Amino acid sequence: MTNLPSQKEAIASALALYETRPFAVSDIGSQSAWLKAASHHARNLYVSGPMGLASSVALGLAACRPKEQVLAVCGDGALAMNLSSLVTIAGAKQENLAVLVLDNGIYEYTASVPVPTRDLDWLAVGCAIFGAGSCFNLSDLSAQKWKSIPGPRMIVADIAPSTEKTPLLGMSPGQIRAVFLEAAKQ
Amino acid sequence: MAEQASGGERLFRSIEAARPKLVTGVPDGMLAGAIMLCEASPNFPYIACAREEECIGVACGAAMAGERAVVLVQNAGLLNSLGALATMGLRYGLPFVILTTNRGVLADPNSYDIEKYMAFEASVKTLTPVFSYPFSNMPDDLVPAAFKWAEAARRPAVIALEKSL
Image (cartoon, rainbow over all chains, first blue to last red; front, side, top):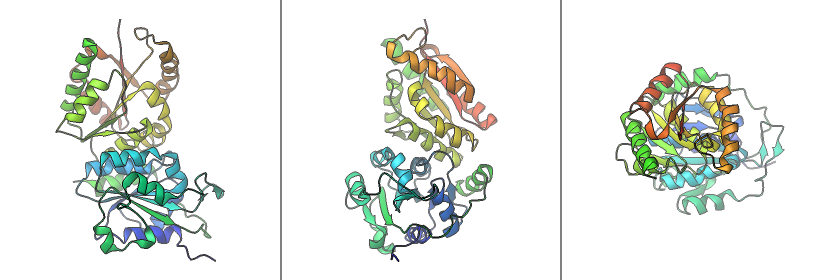
C-alpha cells in the first residue's frame, strides 16, 4: 500500500491550485488519458506526437496567451525526452507557464518499463533551473501559496503506479484541434 | 558576409510582414542576422530554443491557438525534428512556417554539410512539400505567401533557403 496519489488525483490537485481553469497541455499516453479522466475541458490540449513535446507546446501557447495561465502536464519519462525544454522555458521567462512532472518511475503506457530517471531528484532539477522559490512538491502547495510563487514554475508530484488500466483518450487529432481552437480564441 | 547580412535583413522584413505572434529558432550562420533582428523586434517575442524539436512544439502551441508562428532552423535541426513535424504538425494539420537553411548545396560545399543536404533531400521532401529559394535574393513576400499556403493547405509550410552560385 502507498499513500501516494494516483496520476489522476495528482492532476486534479494541480488544477485545483488555480483560481480559474488554466489551459492544460498534456503529453501523449497516460498524461492525456488521465487529464481527460480527471478534468475533461475545452481548455485541455491533448498532445499526440513525440513523447515530451507537451512542455514545448505549452510554451508556445503561453507566449501567445500571456494573460492566461498554462499548465504543462508531463510524465517523468516524457519530460526526460525533452529535458532541454525546461532550460528554454526558464530562458524565455514565461511567467504564465508551469510544468507539472508526474513521477512514477515507469512508462505507464508501455508495460510499466522503468524510466531512466527513476532515481532522479526532480525537485533538485527544478530548483536548479527555475530557482528554489519556483519549484515545489505538489504535497507542499496550497492555492494560497501557489498564487504567490513567481513563474515560470514547476511542480513535482510523486505518484503511485496505476492499478487501473489507463483509459483511452477517444478523440481524434481533428476533434482535439477543433475544440481547443475554439477555447483558445481571443 | 555582406551578402549574408543583406539576406538576413530581407528575411527579417519578410517575417515582420507576415505579422507572426511569435518566432522561435536555433541559430545557423545564415540565420544569425535575422535571429538578432527578431530578438530585438518589439512586434513579437523570439523564443530561443535549446533544440530544434522544441521549436516545432512551440510553433504547434501557437498554431493550436490559431496564431501565426515562424520556425528558424538549419536543415540538420529539422532532420532532428521530423518526429514532431510528422506526428504533431502534420497529424494535427497545423499551419505554421518553417524557414530552414539547406546547407550543403552546390554553392555551399562545406564537407561537414554534404550529408545534411543529402538526408534533407531524402527525407523531408518525401514527407511534405519543400519550397526552395535563394537566401540572398528571396522574394519580399516570401513569408506572407508561405503562411497563405500553410493556412490553405492546413499543414506546415517548409521553405528551404539556399546559397546560390
